[in-house]
Length: 218
Image (tube, rainbow, N blue to C red; front, side):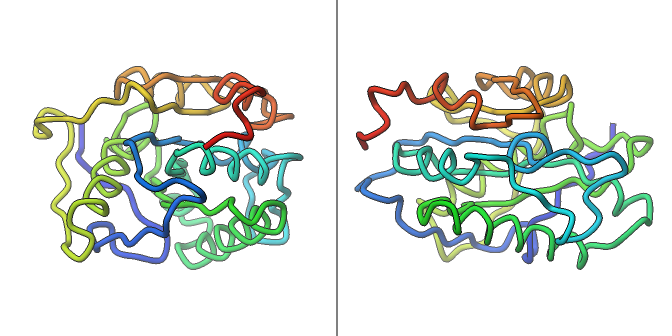
């Protein structure tokens, strides 16, 4: 197994992460929503989402992300993007796709800010720890978000697997994905997993995370 790390949207991985305040929430209580991308936020496409014009938001995805953040969740995208490692297109093309994703989410709900976007560019045959079903992206996401609350101006050295000690509890966190690899990554990491239908995405399971009677509460 290779400890190939994940990559971070428009940033070096271990650069300090500065987060905006959660809407209506005074203090973050440690909850993270780890979200896969394709089939969760945007429509899955045969042959990949190759450019920003091909990115189609699933209905209600923006509202669901906004609802998570209004209920105290930080939102961390964890997505396998092997076209980069396969040489189909590069990091710059993926950055534009993720810019469009954030823009479309905010157009639907002004609170639908993505706190962190992590991706694995590694091809499946590289055996990367950062590629789901392995948990490297989730491990990095937790450490980056935790560090942003404790030492927001300090870079972080991220640990993986057996080298990461004193892990925080993931009891209140969740992962939403549409594939078995997402669920296996969540199980290895130790976070509650919810598998969604790729035709409906996160909007189809949001009531399993935030019951309708709590949707208006922070």
